[in-house]
Length: 586
Image 1 (tube, rainbow, N blue to C red):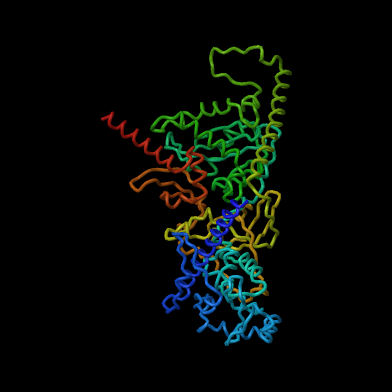
Image 2: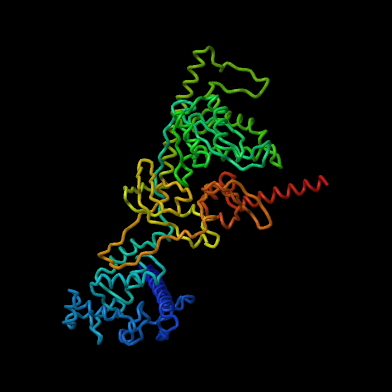
C-alpha cells in the first residue's frame, strides 16, 4: 500500500501542474490580446511555468497572493465602466447587498475601497463578485468567450473563475456556449452522424424498379465519352449504354425506350441522383405521362442510390483490367463486360442476374453440354424460375436487414425537426470563391427554416436564401447535413450580439455547389480534376480546390484508389508507359 500511494500522489501532482500551466497560457494570451500596445503590470516570476522542464512552481502564501500584482483581467478596470456597473448592481442584488452591509459576518468575502466585493477561492486568490445583472453577465461571458477563441463551456467557465464569481456561473456559461452561433457554425461535429438507414422498397418482380447513373468521362471513342448504367434493383441485371455528354434529355429518352423499355417494359419507379438530365422538364414530363415514379436522391446524399454506386465501382474495376493502354477500346468492351456482370452471382440475391431474368444461365463456351440439371418441360422451367425469384427476394430482404443493422451501428438516432424549426446547413459540398481558404470557411451556414419534414426518410426541405436558390440548389437535405439551432435566451442574455449571415460574395462564377467529380488529368501544375457544378457547367480545377470536397471521396472510391497518392502513382505509371511506347515507335 505504501508503494502505491507515492505513485498516485505523483500522478495527481502532474495533473494539477498541467492545469496550472494551461491556465497560465490562457492568462498570457488574454493579456496579449486585450491590452496590446498599453503598459501592463509586470507578472511576478513565480507565476511563470517552466513547462519544458516540468518543474512545480513555487507556492505563494496567502499574504503574498494578496499583495502580488494580479494578472491582467478581461476588462481594463481603470478605463472601463464595468466597475461602476458592478457597484450599482450590488445595491440591488439580494445576496451581495447583504454581504456588503455586514462583510465581517462572511469570512470568504470582503469589500474594497471602490465598493467591489471580492471572494476568496480555494487557491487563496481574490476574485470580483458579479451581481445578478443579466446584461453585465452577458457582457462578461461574451468577452471571455471571444478572448478564448470560442472554446467550450468548461474552458470558458474556468477562465472566468480566475477573475469573477457569481452563483450560477457554470450554468450560465453552459447555456451561453450552447446557443453561440459562431460555435455552431465553425466547429466540427465529434458525434456519430445523424440519420438511421432507411432502405428503399424492395421490388417483387424483375425490372419493377430500376436505378441509373452516368459513369465517366472516358476517352472519346466512336462518338461516346460516358457510360449510362441502368440496373434492375431486383435481379441486379445491368445494361451498359455508351452515350455522349452533348446528348439531350430527348436523345436519352429514345435510347431508354430502345434499350430498356423494348426489352423489359416500363418500370414502376426509377432511382437516380440529381443529374441535370434527370431533373430536366422533358425527363420529368415523359415519365409522368408513362406513369413512372422518379425517386431522386436529396442534395449531396449519394447513399440513396447506393446499389448503383456499388455497381459503378465494380464496373470501373472490370474496365481497368480489360481495356488497352490507350483506353480507346472501352466501347468495344461494353457488351462482354455487361455479359460478365450479368453472369456473376450477386452477393445480395445469391443468384446470377441471368438466372433470375431468364431462368437459366447462358453459355459462352461452345462445347459445353446441358447436363441432368437442365429443367425438363415448360412447367418445370417456369416453376424453377419463380422459385429462384422468390429465393432471391428473401435473400434481398436478409441482405437489407444486415445492411441496415451495420449502418446504424455507426449512426445515431435521427435528430427530428418540426416544421418551423431553424437548422444549420453543412458546407462540406460548397465550393467557395478562389480567395477563400477551405480550412477557414464555416462548417455550417444558416440558420434556415424547415418548410417540410419527412422524418420517415430523414429528409427535410429548407427555406434557402436567394444566394443558394439562384445556384439551383435543391432545398431538400438529409438530416446528416443538418445541425439543430439553439436560440439564445433573451432574458438570460439580453443585448447579446449575433453574427451576420454568411456572405456568399459577388463571384457568381465560382461559388457553386459541386455535383460530382468526373475525371482527372496531370499537367505541369500537378493533378487536375474535372468538376461538374450544380448549374451544369464543367471545369478543370486543381487538387487544392477539390481535396476537401465530399465528391472527392466518392470519386476516389469509384476509381478504386485508397487515397490521392494511389491516384498519382497510377497517373505516373500511365505516363511512363506512354513515353516508353513513343520511344519504341520512334
